[in-house]
Length: 198
Image 1 (tube, rainbow, N blue to C red):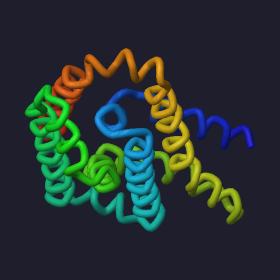
Image 2: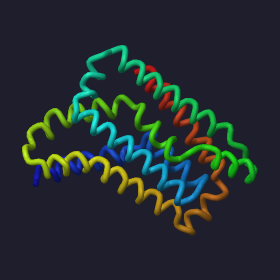
Image 3: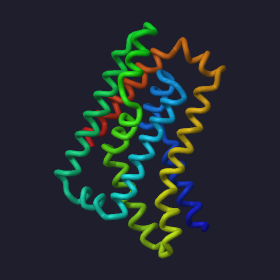
Image 4: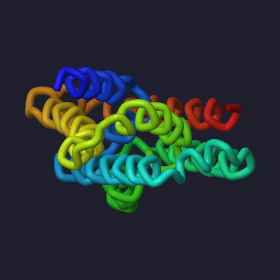
């Protein structure tokens, strides 16, 4: 059980690192609602479950060992992050257009795409599952290990969403909403360029 606690701790630290996942949760929660934030988190968690499954059945290792396939996924992820960033940067300050833009995309799909096309997550799971999960022999423990990253990610994102949607915080962020969205957009563009450059 000690090994699992260490594994869960590593997963929590990974979830807490600011990145595209955090950025899209911030954007969709601030521009949409608590519901929009949770739907985005569900999309991110679903993509993580797919990463885990790909790692377990060995496809992630195949992707890692096939440079052309890895590069294609990396470029798709890069293009999607840059696209999202540009959309967020184009946000207008008036309330009506913000609401229209927030409602025009599907938060579940947006969350899933951000995580799914990040090859670095796949590689991380290849490294972790090849050494940790391979040594676990009992089926219940294997299920526990495989579900831990998904549950940890969703739990951490839920804490962020609940904090952001507190009335006092919402009131303070309301005036800065458009600026925050543009900062997030710029961050996503930079993350996309970084991912594209490898």
